[in-house]
Image (cartoon, rainbow over all chains, first blue to last red; front, side, top):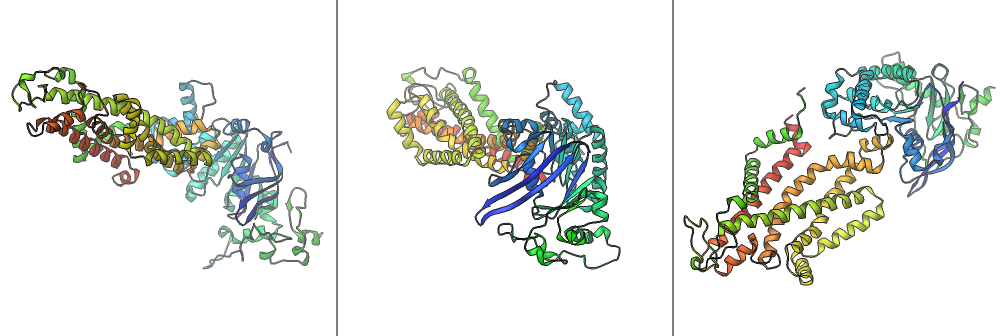
Length: 322
Length: 286
């Protein structure tokens, strides 16, 4: 395996709240190898957004980085100066946002925004316009020349998201962070965007960090997957390993709850009992203990570490087996 | 999907559907035209004194009569418009520019800066304008520049507050975050993304502000704090006419009508623009 483009080590982040520090991320380890698509799954509030905000260093003002490092191509992003960090954004690291209806400026034409995004390039106006046209064409927008004259409200959600992807890939970044880019789209469009993203990834050779809570999207698109729960990585491995042989009880439950995998007709969809633990007042031991049906005595005492080589999971059951 | 048209074209076709807005637009155009063309349209020199023909009623020679020194009131009103126009143009553009910068600083900058700026805006606004003007004039003496200065100082907070709230609302929007994530600097975000979004409300505010500024200039000149005689201003025409109201009502009428026309014209026009640019109202007819 080649050197990872992004290597996050033991990252811990908390938010300062009136109730006390909210432990949003605890000892998160994550590698994004070159040219791979890594998916992150987890329910709302599991720290996905905090993680990507930490990577691009746009954390909320009350967020504090406890420890750890975010290594991007040999540089620790957490220790980079603000100007260096800004120079990386949109150039080597790019991002596609969740809601295409709000992530484009409503009062500027698509052309103007695509031109603006190339503000670092030394190319002249005609070359930049040509580049915009080329990028729109590559993300599958028909008649790009007309679209450049249009305003975001003239475009459908799917087209806007394509424009956002085109803008993100404009500078040919090494890492593209996609924050639930298909959640706001309907199912047909979702499939189209996913396929397009996969093609573009092959063409550009960039790595993608893809955040979603849609299991089938992750299964379709990603090479490797990381399962997060309440600010911790509970399982990671190749998509095949994790989806066929989930080791952590949380992943197992999550897969059981995926409507796409339920064969029988049913009136009631399965759910995972209980709710996320309070991150301000963390219980000791395993984070998933309260909702786990395989609870052991030691789960209440010590926190399980990730174990395994390629396919890792943090659960005491795995130690018991071996 | 219709071919996207320019903002000017869309604004104008929407304006045509709004009779009140159109009235305002026509009034504003007439006033601007008459004022700009005053040197060519005015039948007499506004300063030419003819004491043999004092306080005459309208006639074929003097359409709006003459004042207490026999000066042609129509010519004085036309030239008075130039003073009003100059004051509103200079005062509004300067206070809008400064208000824009301060408002953006308050809306986008750190919280302590916001607090300091808001407190200073409130401090300036807490003085009654006329009292403030009296104090400044007492220090510097009456002149047109003093009037402009007073209006600028008291108008900056009005613009700055609107810009501040608009900027604050925008800074939390996704596309601003997206711009940041794409490596845009704060100055680039403010210039290329915040400014185009607040330009429309700012110009509407400026349009609605014209009557207030013109009124303030007239008021200060009426009190003798503005232009020094014999320069004509709508306020000084009113003041001259006021002293001779028993002899002739014409100077008062001639000085007051343009003030009413400006107020109505710019208010109708501004309100119509606001309706056109308000996205909530616009979406209905699309």
